[in-house]
Length: 65
Image (cartoon, rainbow, N blue to C red; front, side):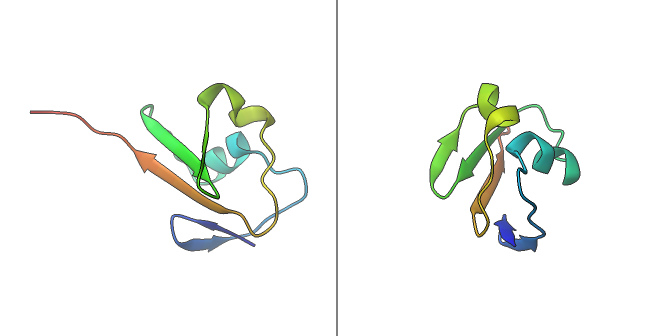
């Protein structure tokens, strides 16, 4: 299991950040992903594997006035 924004999520061998975002339907274009406190760059989502037990934070960025 992994933790995504405080909730448990099933883990599987080889799971990437990109796959997780797709599974969770996080499609908002402006977001930041942190894994175990480390920032994951957008261009690394598809090749960054998630280890079992990881803590993932997906933060949607908003702007406005």
